[in-house]
Image (cartoon, rainbow, N blue to C red; front, side, top):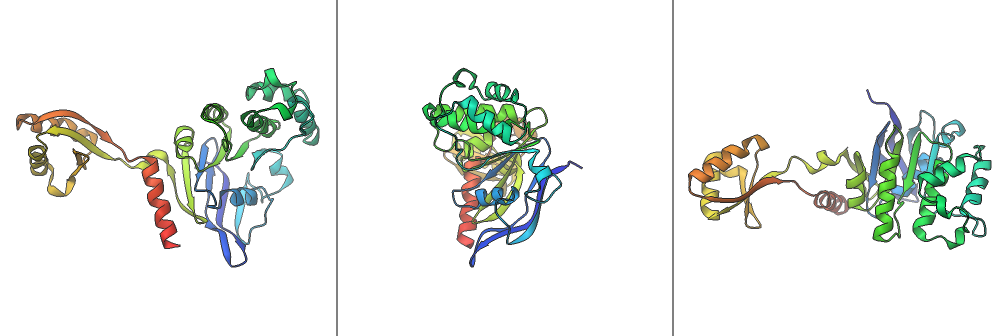
Amino acid sequence: MTQLLVQTTNLTKRYGPRAVVDHVGLQVRRGEVYGFLGPNGAGKTTTLRMLLGLVRASSGTARVLGAAPGAPAALARIGMLVESPAFYPYLSGRDNLRVFARYASVPVATVDEVLETVGLADRAKDRASSYSLGMKQRLGVAAALLKDPELLILDEPTNGLDPAGMADMRTLIRRLGTGGRTVLLSSHLLGEVQQVCDRVGVIAEGRLLRQATVGELRGHGSLRVAAEPLHQARAVAERLLGVERVAVHDGALLLDVDDAQAPRVNRELVLAGVAVRSLGRAERSLEEIFFEMTASAQGAA
């Protein structure tokens, strides 16, 4: 069985009568990049703060690296970037990290290693006040890496970045997720999660709606066939597969069959005199699934 580095059971945080995190059961496996996906205000940051011992849970339990949230021995093996990083503006990037290294009892030699990792080695001597927002985010990731953490927690690391900065951060996260390190990434950006994460937990209104791989969330999809004449193609497909497995969407057939059936479908359409322009898998987008799930959760709330 894959070892779980993060596991929560019915984790709940209430402020007065309102539950901002509601009975969340989170499972993050060793060596994966886990995307914690949800709209702004869904409870992502509060959940992460509870995992780190920064906020006390109202009820439920959590284990992080085998210990209770906030346990010193576990925190020593965790790197974190929660909300916006803060630095001494009059110090250089390198000197800021040297301060953090001393606090964390980390060899100062590690500072240059993490600066190289996040691509800031050539700007290490510059004052932090001169850094762009993207550079400050990368410096925050560098600070989180100082302890060579077993678990890296990143809360919305691309917030406020321009497209180039977002692309740089995604590349960095993909690189950090290799070599056995576990990354827990919270985000409201679907593209970010789809491109860098192995598994996803979808949260809305404080409730965890589902945990699965991106592929599992999107499902097997349908076979999309663009053919002319469409009415004749539909009649052939319905005779071959049954009416319930054939639909028309955006001027093409959507067939509820697996890939192994594609040659047979194509052959029958051609033999019937139908011109097949294209035939391929039509998977549902993560965006479509996300909005469907979160809309249902908000409606229920």
